[in-house]
Length: 195
Image (cartoon, rainbow, N blue to C red; front, side, top):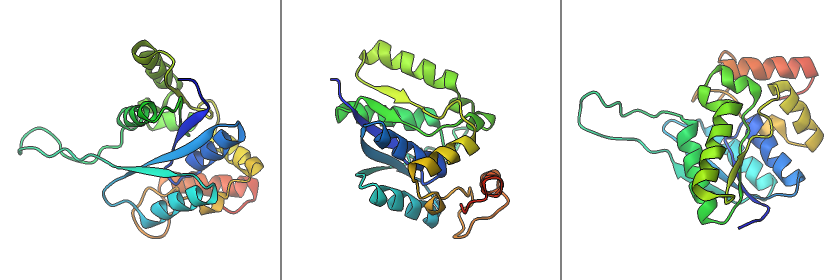
């Protein structure tokens, strides 16, 4: 299997929107994948739908698994985890004969999560190559870029950044205090743009 088909991870945020536009700009034939999770903010869902409709990208959604068990030491809570997300994406990509899974991780993501580093994806791809040969590869085009650089690329690619959602809260309006909102505001101010 060798083709230019990609499954792009879509979260409704700036990075994933730019990743989708980037993937299309380099000639990849894209479909999107998103995860539905408990208490997901409505504006986030709307942002996901808007970006996919705007780019005429078919979207698949996976309901985030919640593990239920007997009361005890096993935690049955929602846990965002890139290993889980990308494992599911890789499986779906292979089944649907897509060579690439494209994500929007940027250099600043590693400050919050060890499963968002360049090393993490290098090792993940190494494992995929061992198990599946050249069937599928994870591409993280922004892994060495700061968030502001991703925004600048988005502007260059014509991404409707004002229609993305960054807030970590579940309310209908941005909280303006979470780290994602603060970063979004700082970048908008630095670049004198509306986000």
